[in-house]
Image (cartoon, rainbow, N blue to C red; front, side, top):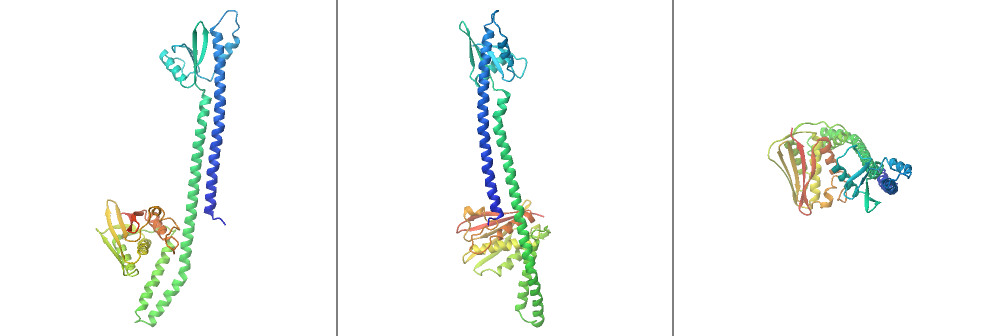
Length: 381
């Protein structure tokens, strides 16, 4: 059964195809209408030329009623009648009532580049020329396909934005539901374990292993608390960044291979507004990822510095690195190059830094078989 995201993708592709077909059909129909209207206007100008020729060869015995009506009937097509030297004899349907001879000559020349002038043979070697432009209706119809295409493009973009927002909203609901359900499911066994460790402390007060067990159970409680905060409004407080990173690296140092050196250095002491449990989770995830990237022996270095209004935290390892085609994918939910795992760690890290701390996180540099550096940017407090 197709997922809702696959259904949305199918709808998106179907919409693209329909939109393209509509645009193509509109272009074809519009082009046909433009050609028909253009041919009709050319025919009208030929008729207008015939009537003008009849009027030019005026004689007292002739009936020029029809010719006058044809000439007067043209109320839409801009037209200029001129001699061989572009000296204008008459004009109709131009924007202004009055023009200088120079302006009319330029208009006639401009019209000659739009439509082929119609030659009127007056006789005795005398010729007049009809220069004409496209009517307002024909020009409007010419722009119609472009306007329609722009409207469809805007509509298409709006549909994509709506689909994207809907997808993000659904993903957020899944994230929040998953994390809160995880916290809820962990709550009961953790409470039970806490009670058992207290009983063990009372019964075996000198046992050195029980305090360590207690630490791990409290750690589980911290993890459950982190999950419960996802989807809730982040509570930030002024915190010394150095102290949080130092404490987290000390915790991680005891839980990674002794062949991997984990170090932390800083150029000064810096403060930021942060949610400590969630930020510790970020550092733990990045250190864990760096550990997984190192085959056996290696080093992970965290370096804290600041410039202007920003604090920079670099996490560098000398592991297997990230290929160029995967750098842009590492923060996507579900993306992983590991044989085990759901690919959610870096996605959570990205969400915590961007949405809760209003900071930035990105791959600063990476080279296959050389190593990777992630950079976190936080605003100074």
